[in-house]
Length: 276
Image (cartoon, rainbow, N blue to C red; front, top):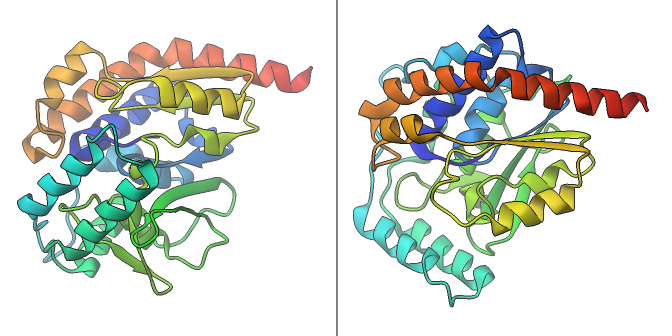
């Protein structure tokens, strides 16, 4: 489940709820990889919670609203859009920008994520992987239930886009958004027989990276679900527009119902391959 800002979170949760209403529960998956916004819905599903919980955006009691540092956000985008930049050095530069940004207290963002996912405990019966980016080195770290990180902090780190949310401290290190390496990190699902990629930002970026990741994961069956034109219209131009949450969720519900048969077939094909 991939990155997509607030509207991507709403759409992905709606998609999952639409599939459930059609008799298909994505929570039955053995493995979840949740990147950035996708980490929220992945954590909900992996811990057995209802994605309808996100029909409206939950807020922590007395919570502090996000404090966006527009100047630093612009600097981060400028670095990330430089096609000539070395990717590793670009991530380190973005990390320095994030550490200098004025985006409010870490705990406020952790509290926001806790309000969304409802728990600090990792699932015991489902594998959940949450990729993040080290703010100092730019390297990828993947949090899981074997990591010494509360679940809400891991989700907060994976959603901490520079200039919007603060880097999150886990065991003395600061971490940033997991999408700085990949919008979906689908390659982390290597070994899966059936791989379903939910990519809310598919319309924004070239597909070459995802194609390479799918080749690396080498599933027997792969299905990619992305927003259609009606969903993109609901998203609007700003992926962090809170007023677009309800329409994005509603379009996710619709696409979940419309995608259900394709999802069912992919699931069945992978299950049949497991029996062969």
